[in-house]
Length: 118
Image (cartoon, rainbow, N blue to C red; front, side):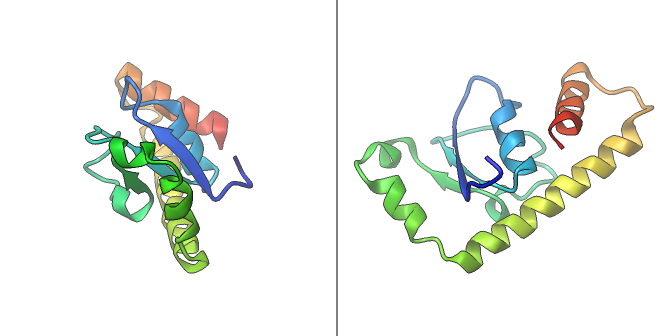
């Protein structure tokens, strides 16, 4: 994952799926395949700056994803990665500050996962 430019992130059954966090930690641009998805921390993370969104039907067309991703310039990939790094650093700082506070179980699990992956 650390050497990949893009990481496929199909919609799962939970908004806190680890594959999204794995991609962020790896600075791998998430390619989110979904027609409608609820993403973690949507109130603070502008996912349009760190991810590429693809509709489910479009993703199923032969060659569509490969063509789409080949069209992303190196400069744009670097912009995505710069934003991903900022999100990662912000999340680490937030976790450090909230370590001693009362976190919900799911938030604590996410925070611990971030630390493990980082």
